[in-house]
Amino acid sequence: MIKRAYMIAHHIQRGMEGILSPKSTGKLIAETSKDVKINANKTKQVATLMYECVKKSTYSIKSWKEHELNPKSMNIDAIDWIFLADTLNFSFWSMDDDKKFVVNYGGKQHSGYWSWCAAINRALDEGIPMTDPKFYANVSKEQFAKIMRSDSKYDIPLLDERLRILHESGKILLEKYDGSFANCIGKCDRSAQNLVKLVVTDFPSYQDVAEYNGRKVAFYKRAQILVADIWSCFEGQGYGEFHDIHKITMFADYRIPQALVHFKVLEYSDELMEFLKKDNLMKFGDKYELEIRGCSIWATELIKDETRKLLDSDPATKDALMNSILIDHFLWDYRRDHAEEMNDIPFHKIRCIYY
Ligand SMILES: Nc1nc2c(c(CN[C@H]3C=C[C@H](O)[C@@H]3O)cn2[C@@H]2O[C@H](COP(=O)(O)O)[C@@H](O)[C@H]2O)c(=O)[nH]1
Image 1 (cartoon, rainbow, N blue to C red):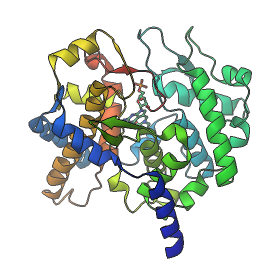
Image 2 (image 1 turned 30 degrees about the horizontal axis):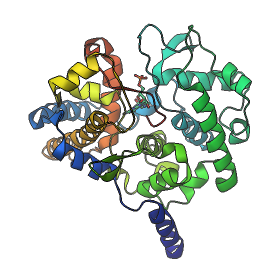
Image 3 (image 1 turned 90 degrees about the horizontal axis):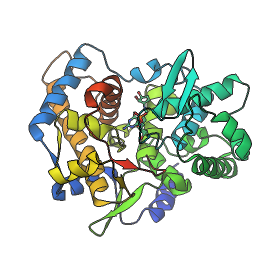
């Protein structure tokens, strides 16, 4: 057991030299950021909101399965569903809010991230083995286009990239992990960090890394949300049991920053706000982008620390679970549920496969 753990750590470490972890990335960027600032007082307000949710049990690890499109079971099928969902969990935004990819499913119209989940479930209902890597490692362009058919006039962005990544990820899963992500989990000795490192080492589309002031920095948004979704689905048990799950940071996407600006936790410079309001496209690795993503990670860490203090000060909640995953999911769901209020807050627009 020890030898194997050492071998894994050594194998993984080899590939990760000199890359800052997401938490260290967030700290570094927050300390030097010019156009994005964190308002420590406002982090206390969001922490109070989280504390209230825990007290009223309106937000917990169980919230993940309450989403109608997420798997309800805690089995291998759910793991393979989650791996597929998070492998293509990126870039759903459209320049015009009324020109977006939409999938009708379960009597509802789904857009954004949920449109992708709806497409998966629609395919499964049609008898297509969508979550089986033996299927998607070789799915044809035509069949994938049919699976991803839109119920609006607009296709999902980066359709060709998505097909390429499906083929790439499916082949790796078949060749190295006997066709199921459950086998990747089995190799990580219940360590979330080991699993993140395995994913970003073996699955190239997850290598969400950039350079900031000469340092290699990692956000690992999709790798971390993959581990977090497994943890959430299994409620921290069985395949979802990770002794170091608290080391996972928030997932640096383009939506949480909107929520953090809404709560005034993040403050953008006039120049940045001007740039965003003009719907200018950013490129992956731009300074503005790194400052938004890095400060979002660090702001969420500060919110987590403040929430922990409040929970510890109350006998009724001192043993309550709290981590950056729960805060992230709360903020993400809050943003979707209060989209109207946040429409005036621009999000950074970037076409990439990392988030
Ligand atoms: N930080 C963070 N980013 C998240 C998620 C999720 C889905 N998780 C949900 C599912 C069950 C859980 O309870 C979560 O509520 C998707 N995304 C990202 O958002 C963007 C899509 O946004 P929109 O265009 O509005 O659909 C895109 O970058 C996508 O990668 C999350 O949880 N956290």
